[in-house]
Length: 183
Image 1 (cartoon, one colour):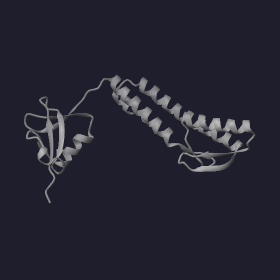
Image 2: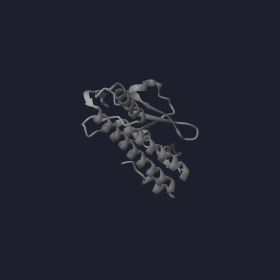
Image 3: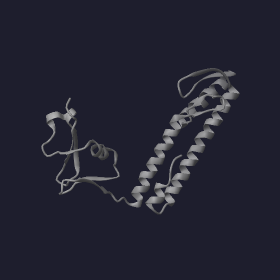
Image 4: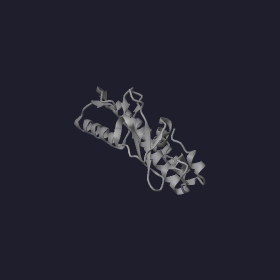
């Protein structure tokens, strides 16, 4: 069995333009590509906090990219927003042991079902949880409780997000921005 070899190609500005593996690309690897070990090959994919360049000495090094404070803040804002969205999408376990989606749309849908049941004089309702499991014959008082829990959970997450955004906006250094974390 042939040993797998790893290669990286660079443009005229010594920046990476391609990565190649002998087991995938075979004889299609450009002649000007530089052979590297697997560890460096993988680092150039994973470590994106700088620019990987080929030096005159044919050594590959990572150069830091200096971002402005506003750029660092924007990046952190999107990171916090994505964490908020993911946390909302994951749902939460209610006091009735039903995993609920607490997104605005899910809460509005449950509220509409509740309102229709009240209008029709129903006393029980079926609820499909976050995992697609249907829970039958839930009293409307419990549905009301689920709605309050979902809204409370969403609001707590949103307050956390807003507090973190305020911390990002108040930060005066990139290090202070980096310290802001979704937990």
